[in-house]
Image (cartoon, rainbow, N blue to C red; front, side):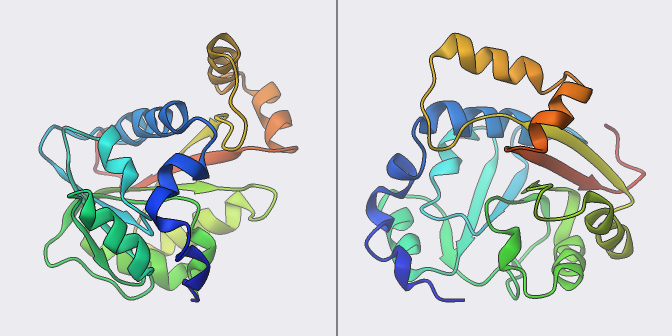
Amino acid sequence: MSTSKYAQLAERWTDEAYADATAYLAHRAELVLSLGPGLAAGETILDLACGDGGFAHYLPNLEYHGVDASPDMVAAAQRRGRDVVLGDLNDYEPPEPVAAATCFRAIYYARDRAAFFRRVAGYTERKLVFDLNPRQYRVADVANDLRAAGFDRLALRPFFSPQRISLPRPLVGTLYALERSGPLARLLLALRFSYLCAAFRGGEKR
């Protein structure tokens, strides 16, 4: 995986990758905490392909650890005091199990998706949360790979937070309400946006 394209972007990655980083990442954090089994204060979360670790700011009650394959991103994160280390999501394993793992805007970096899910399942106790473009990947295929890795439950939630457009807050609230609109939400997903997915094991409480 080439990371050279991030060298000039790392220092202001979170600020410039999203038109409204606060709205986008706060909503993502809300769903990371609530989708599938809940997470309690103090539990550990591993953010795979975390960039500059800016997501840590939106998960203040969790013990945040990040890993990224770009040395420049890791350096930018560490300058901000974030616990981020260098590593490839395909090979990295944390020194200890984590309650949850996340992987956003990066699932396509998995060289072998099924193998990636198996590796993550080996060190994740509660759930794996990631985003999925249903126009790029068939949900049924991804669910099959997760099931083979030991994640036999999958919770899906449409994620209608624009990444590159800053919208007035009332319109953002309308989009969030549409996430629960059933058929209309699925129609929107056929055109744009993504799912947030929480994969977990049947014994976990939702």
